[in-house]
Image 1 (cartoon, rainbow, N blue to C red):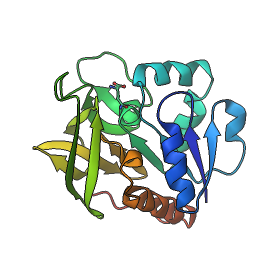
Image 2: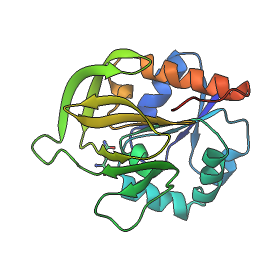
Image 3: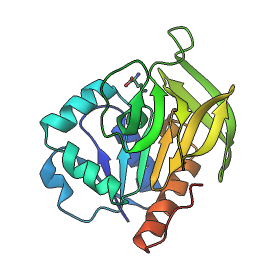
Length: 198
Ligand code: GLN
C-alpha cells in the first residue's frame, strides 16, 4: 500500500506518522514528478485551503490529482482538504477540485469556537476523538453523499464513493481508526471493489 500525502503546506507530517505506524508506505507529493509511481490512496491534509489551492495550480498538480480522484483514487481529506474537494464553498465564487458534491462553510465555528475538542460517533467506525481547528462544516450534501458524523446537528464527516471528507483532524488524536478505515478503502479500491456510499 503506497499512500501519497499532499505536502505543499499544512499538517501533512502527522498523517504520514499515523499511516506509517499502520504499516502503509507514504510519500510526499510536492510536484508533478511525485505522481509517477504507484499511488493507492491520497491524503489532502489540513492547513490553509486558499494557499493549498493556489499551490496546486501553480505546481501543475491540480489537473492530474483531479483526474485521479475522478477515476476512483481513494482520498482522505481533512479540514482544509475537505474544502479543496468541495463542489461549493459557501459565500465564495470559486472552488478548488470540486469532486465532492457538498457545500462547505469555511471557518464555520467563528472565532471564539474556532478550535475545540469533542468525541462523537462516526458511522462504520464508532465513537472517536475529534479535534476541530478553525474548522469548516458541511452545510449541504447532495445525491449519493453519506453522512458519517454530526456534531451539534452539523455534518462533520461525509463519504462519497472513494472520497472521505472530515471537518476535524484525526491525525492529531492518537486514535488511528479513521486512518485504518481509509486504508481499507484503498485496499478495496486496489482489489477492484467499489464503495457503497448510499
Ligand atoms: N480555516 C482553514 C481554511 O479555511 C482550514 C483550517 C484547517 O485545515 N485546520 O482553509
